[in-house]
Length: 394
Image (tube, rainbow, N blue to C red; front, top):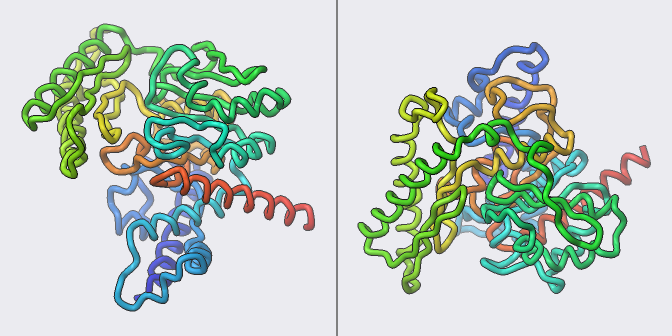
């Protein structure tokens, strides 16, 4: 079977899966499990990794990508994972261009280089500004958690500088969701961020967290991280924030370090799930339950955060009026507003990454560096323009 044929089969399977989901929606049937589609039979646990919000025109994406990188001309070297990733990204861009209303981005290695910022020289400033001018909401959704806006203003300084000269209808479309889901800031006049009051946007699940439960959770996370780093003989520094515990790797560069950091992320996740499962955690209210959390390898660190990007993006969607429910609402139920309006772009979609959970509430692009983000955002901008022109013609 050729690569084109294989991608065509996947495209057809996704379309069938979406059609069965649409039937469930129209019949108001609870979706306690995934539909009995060809796709769900091939990948029984597909529901654990999020949802499909659009078809994926993989045949079209393959032909376009093959024109850029002549994959089909190679006789001995098969297609790489990264080339497959590019094809799926391009298919997603084409599919969502005529309905996207919110674009969310990870920071490091997505909008800017690791531990850097989006300065005035970044080639991403212009396409992001163009999307804001078209009325799209744009948000940095990051694990970086600060209750004040200045660290985020530093990270987006180049874009904020341009927004100083824009109308409120443009600059007010820029947001930051910090600490995964714990802080929300909106751009105001003068290119400055202002905090959005919690009561206006925060998910009731987040608002219900008790400080005692959070402290107990983060205490165990910190102890587990410290023990694992000692077991693996890694030099590290402990970091504690109001809603996160983490370790920073302080040793020398070593090809094995990312593997150990992945291992730590998995092991601390297992340890926390064992102790804080719904049956195992007694909350301050006296009931049993669980705190949503994510663990991830950030490149040179491992963090455990209370909350997740899925909750943060869902909260922003609700604040913007794109959905009428909270993340805490039954995720297995079918809702009529489950539409293709949000695209999340990030570099952390492995099982040790914190972008993976975003697939529960948004379509996604998996990139590995800012230059890839630039390519796909430019392609999205072009596709939006072409489809808008076509709708006017018709």
